[in-house]
Each structure stands twice: as C-alpha cells, then as structure tokens.
Amino acid sequence: MSEIGNIQWFPGHMTKTRRLIEADLKMVDAVVEITDARIPESSRNPILDELVGSKPRIMILNKCDYADDVSTALWRKYYEGRGITVITCDCRSGKGINKFLPTVKTLLKELIERRKSRGMIGKALRLMVVGIPNVGKSSFINRMANSRKTKVGDRPGVTRGKQWVSIDKDVELLDMPGILWPKFDDQLAAQRLAFTGAIKDEVTDSEALARALGELLQMDYPELLKARYKILCEGDILTEIAKARGMLISGGEPDTERAAAALLDEYRGGKIGKITLETPQE
Image (cartoon, rainbow, N blue to C red; front, side):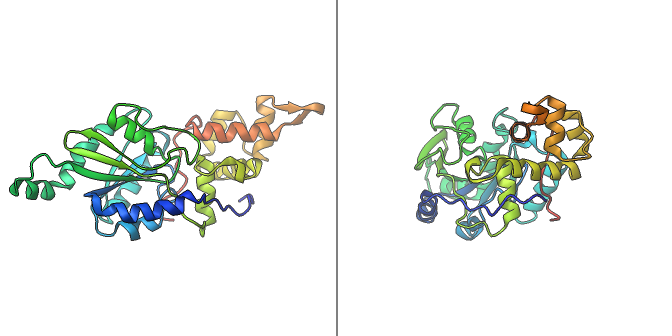
C-alpha cells in the first residue's frame, strides 16, 4: 500500500459536538446514524456506541448507489446482528428514503403505544441525526424535509450548529454538526475516509492518496479500472491513466498530478463503478 503519511484532522468544533450530543441525548427518543455505504465502519465515529448506549438506533447506509451491492448486504446483516436497525438509501437519487418514517414508527412502536395510553397525543417523536462530515447527513435531512433547511456542502465541516427540522407531523429531527474522532488510531480507516473525501484534501498528498486508492482498486476491482481508463493495470496506475488520457506535460512526460485528481474525483462521483472498500470480515 502506498505511503500517504499520518493523517490527523480534528477541528475544535468537533470536540464541542461531543459535549452537545451528550447533553441533547436526554431530549431524544432515538438516534439516527448516517454512514457511507462504501466504507460503513470507517465512516462511523467510534465514540457513538459509548455515547448512545441503549437508546434505540437506526443506521442509514447512505450512498448505496455507489457501493457494491453484495458488500452492502453483508454490512446490513453485520449491523442487524448487533441490534441496530439498518436502512440502505441514496440521498442524491432519493432511493430508499421512503423507508425511513415507517422504520422509525416500527422501531418506536412501544413508545408510541405507551404515550397513547397516557393520553399524550400529538407529542412528536424526536430523533437525533449524527454522522461524520461528508456522509450525506444534510442531504438526508433535506430529502426528509423536502426543503433546503440546511446548508449542504461537499466540503467537510460545512454544516454548523444544531437545528430541529420537522419532517412529519409526528417526527422531528435534531441535526447535529458532523463529528470526527479526535485521533485516527486506525490509519487504514483514515485513509479510506480520505479516499471518499470525508477528510479535507489539503491535509493529504493527493498523488500518494490516489496511488494508494489505485492499488486497492487494482486488487479488488481490476475490471472496473480497466474498463474506465482503458489501461492494463500492469504498472504505476497514475502513469497508466495519464498516458491513456493524454495527460502530458512538457517533454511528453505523464502528468500524474492530473491523473491523481481524475482518479479521486471519478471514484468519489461513482463513475468507476459500484465499489466498497471494506468488508465485515476485516
């Protein structure tokens, strides 16, 4: 695996978010955790299990249109085996979003019945929505609210502060800022996050990052790479892509910097194919 250096990225506002989550958990009936279906485990915040405890939880494997369907099914089974309700969806296309409200009402059926028996009619179910930057949390909330109530950005850390969003007469979502753990103890997870753009590109060497991604894809999805770039996958991946695409600098040398940008951009945009970078077996 190519060496991309040690990744450390933890803006101060995320420390604050942990405190906010601890304080606001008392106000909610369940927690909705948004993850990236291409890297389900790497895109989770490890402190969430500890913070959420026994509170009912729904995990949304977002960006499923970009992930390998076989791997997504394995991940779903893995998390359901740990008592977490799982929904697969793609917030960009809207696929699977319609399963959310029925799932919430099934998960919280006992609470709804209990409130009804006490005459607490009309009290909305309140759910906290959490997720690391760039997993599609704001896109999910916008889809559910059918409006542009939150500012959505491709760049990590765009959503600021917390806000309540009403998505149904019976359901309210508490949108929390994206949180990422303070220290990347697992550099492999950090690397996968960098591949998907969840970590700012400015903190990594983009050529080394793209080369590492290319090596991974050569091992696990060689046919997709060959088909996309019309290459043999026999040498340096960036050199091959640059030559195949006519990306040359003075003297006819391959422009590996441009090739790196193309590979990362096209992987993140789902243009290479449906790819998952980790499995439950790992």
